[in-house]
Length: 172
Image 1: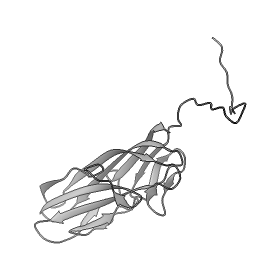
Image 2: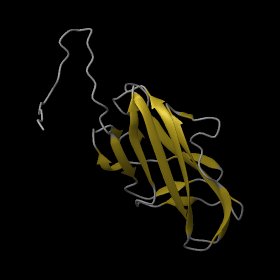
Image 3: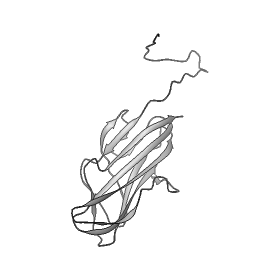
């Protein structure tokens, strides 16, 4: 069987389109240092490190994902809150598109009331599929926790327990 190897294929005329599938944009970002979260407040998660960024589309300065390909993307985020004292708490994590939380339950994380022992923690996650235009659309994340025991802060650890993933499912 013959094979053809090329670096680039261009249409013969301006009205032609040649498409062979999509480029698999993949990003995995996480925190490089601990991040404090405030009781009863939404805190933007400052993801600032990319372990994988196939196309350099993760903005580590503004802590957001801004792909350059129009398409449908699967976005996942995980947050793991730790504590130094025993607590009874609620937490959730949100996925934002262009600074606004995705509505109708899309992009809102799992949430529950947990009793967490001293030095312990628990996680929450969220996933969604969203269309991004490949130019101005971006994704970022926030964390919310409510402490029923007291009104202290929590801490998202600098580890890969606090991370997000993004991948292109279908280009448009």
